[in-house]
Image 1: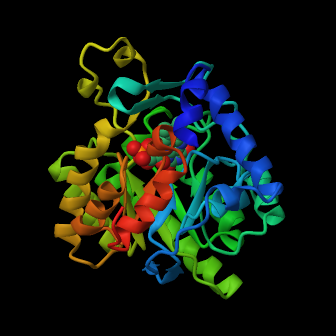
Image 2: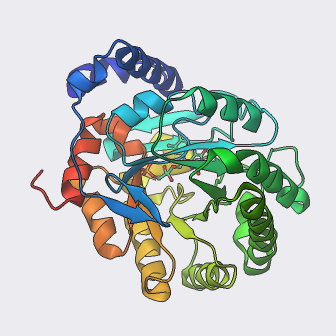
Length: 340
Ligand SMILES: Cc1cc2nc3c(=O)[nH]c(=O)nc-3n(C[C@H](O)[C@H](O)[C@H](O)COP(=O)(O)O)c2cc1C
């Protein structure tokens, strides 16, 4: 059905369509029609950071920033869901327009800037959801918090989100929050992850439950930087690395007019870079830390390739814009080694 309505959806501004589509999915779910349109595909169970998944295909962060659509999205057949990025205080993000489709390249550019209703609102939404599966909460810093105080924001979010998450993702790789990516530097990362791991230990004792901590990195790191991230992740005993976020390299768009837009590029053009980062991490970490592969999954075979490169699980976002919910089923089948 999605290929039929896509031309209509693509006539509208991308952010308007985003809200319309999610609200429609929510309505269909509430009317009991979603499962009829998209019957869930039985997949191959997987384990991620010790968490059992019905299949290895997850929803990437950023699509449901406030956790408003968890039940409807879960009904589409994802093996796990990541909500956020959420910040301590609500913030509007960057001025619109800030989301652009580039259909000629099966790509998306976004400079949303962590628009979200704040961590408290996210938690209220999670409490109202019925979802019992694996739920990741992706955390970040407010735009107005100086980068030197970034750890304070992550600590606030970690503390508030802890009891409500299956795992928590530390997002240090959005290109749309000034200087955020500097937190990927070896010293900065060591300091940040060190204090988050200390807090995690306290919270685990307090709640009697260990909630794993993942870190999400950019595709724009060079070999030495990826190597440093892998070293720090091991030293700090991080529970997973998510590779990758969007890229700031728009050269794949050539002379396309949208190549001039500020923001992160996702979809097909980020696939090679994301695969490359994943592959290097897999070689260096050699199974010691689980990896989640994300970036440029447009077909089932791309998801299977990420598993072959060393990922325990995958996540998708931009592919959904181009392929619709059928992509989830295709990825679930491909990851289970079934024909697609
Ligand atoms: C509109 C948009 C918003 C995003 N927001 C976030 C976010 O808030 N936090 C985050 O960690 N990643 C965010 N991402 C990055 C995605 O989670 C994903 O890492 C990236 O898009 C690459 O995967 P894809 O090619 O399947 O889209 C966003 C991506 C898009 C397209």
